[in-house]
Image (tube, rainbow, N blue to C red; front, side):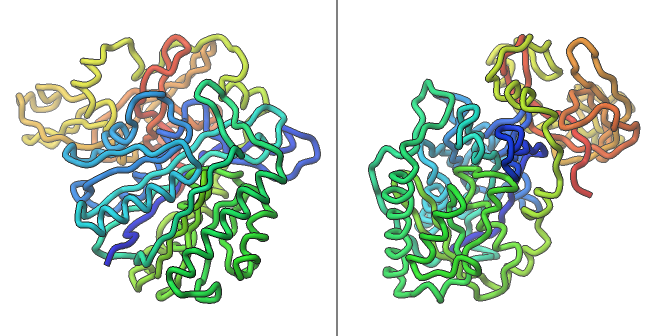
Length: 465
């Protein structure tokens, strides 16, 4: 049996009310913070997906996005390193289309089905930008989702899939463009999205010999509120009961990860023997069918979309949002902790410490240290350490301070596992910080002389109890 064995999602803490963009509009969208991008969100979703799983089981990581921070550099390897996966795994980036998420899922399923791998981690994330004041700026949000595809303890068994290619210029972005572009709305919706998705969904049903009532739910990519209902009706589905709520007015269209995120939300509440179809769009369509097993009941404890939607903070103002997206000039920030002009060689040597936040635990006395040293600070034993991963170790805020000139907030965290780290605080409001408050570690961008220099772990107030 091949199928989905785990899932995890991530939405940024920050929300931008649509009324800040255009007066009179209701709703809000999830927006990545100043130090977040598709990579950091992918790491957050992947770690959520990996909870309770041995990292050594994962044989491959496939990352899908349309908003890669690099024009040429694989990011699946960076995400795998931050998640502390084995080095002898398959890594693959899939990009260029909004259906890269469902495409990556299909690739992962076929790899496992063919016996080329036992467990594949599929991660999708996007951080797209619409031109200021445009309809796309109102609709686009940020987020990430991850699933593990495997053969053991399957939550939802993979049944079949169907794909359709459709070349047309509807939604695009050139390599040197910042903003997503779109052709005339009726053309894009009627001849692009609706026509393609109807044919794709019907193609899968014909291949399976099933009809719409045979599916409990459909996790359908939704660019807007009206088009998915028209697609569902034309394919024989009931939009009110069979289409998973896309929550567009609460988080926006998060792009590549949207179908995986909606599928995850369905699985969190699903019962045994329920069939779900996931469908993605972009340069054609993908549709895949799954049937839940009794194991899906164990997934009801997973953190879902409702928790992320309820855990939020409002962006202070529209100018702040524009600064976060680097759409207006600002004085460059000074260097943050973890951001240096280190050479590529030194970063490579310390990649475990930098990207996976690995410290050391003394075998003689049990003292945890970060960064790692050769001599124990407690018992002075030399070279008697074992590696310990601190990225998922919560802790308590020991002290904190803010530089009024740069607005950087720094702090010291005492890890639950033991050990202490000095670093930058993120996703926080300074006057709400308290000594001894619970904090967690977040994989984020770091800055040096106004440029995104690297990635490192930052300290954040605990978001969920």
